[in-house]
Image (cartoon, rainbow, N blue to C red; front, side, top):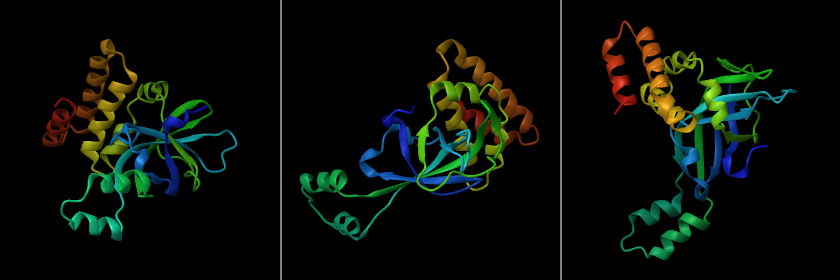
Length: 202
């Protein structure tokens, strides 16, 4: 069972290409990081299959009161803290689907159905991330995603996988495999390949 601390939010809307979830501003933490692996149950899945995705955007919404406060001068600290901690400022997290679970296996591809509204979105466990990244088919899905900052997202996802799921002695091996896969897929675009490799190894 997932731990409450791993809940990213609840689904607001979804399609097979991805989904958005909402949460409260005071819940924002490293579980909402750009490039984090998350999962949510696929709609009407009797076997509790999960859609797997990457966080690619976090929007902290504004409202009239916030707009007025940012224009003010010398706002007391207690007022700012009250606005940040006690008001219901909505946060929207956008996720790109890159895979799904099926009968205990990880599949790289778009899920057959999206998650339902209000389904819980949770962080993938370290074991999930490790298993999912044993194969690198998800790289092409990210490279071809036009609705996201694909290169930055891919680099962030690979770094996240290393930090989350690989012991130090395996990090180099994983990144070398990923680099070779990128070189294979981007053999005709050396400029983009060099840019991506620089993002992965800043």
